[in-house]
Image (cartoon, rainbow, N blue to C red; front, side, top):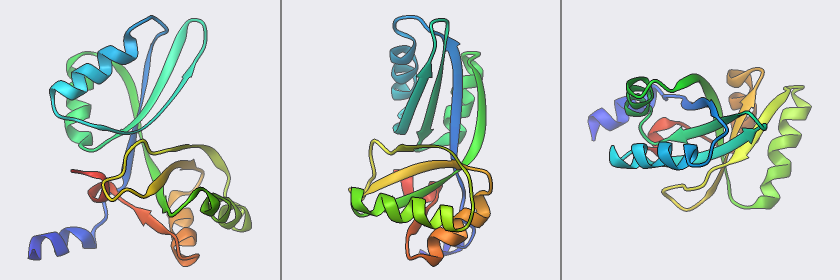
Length: 152
């Protein structure tokens, strides 16, 4: 219990992997299967594709293990910190965007979590200033979650 409290004093940011791949049938399935074999779960996912390539953005419960897998199988990827915010319902989405607009923080992109251990909705947000955004959202009464909140 004491180590859990100490761990919570230093929140670990939610990390997103952007995986770059050829746009071919089965690429996503291959990645999901490999992650599953290592007991790494996809918590949030978004995909952007063109006729030739795809970018798979994902947040997993254990990012260190996922990074090792991506390196082992020579996936081309990048990694960034994200702000993740829990919302009670779709109606709270407007409070998130309003708080960020009020603080003049630009949203680059946003997507929902697929799964949350406590059953609430959550959003993954890529912003120009994560620290300021997290502080603003918390001041507005919204719960910003960290990596420890999504690990199983």
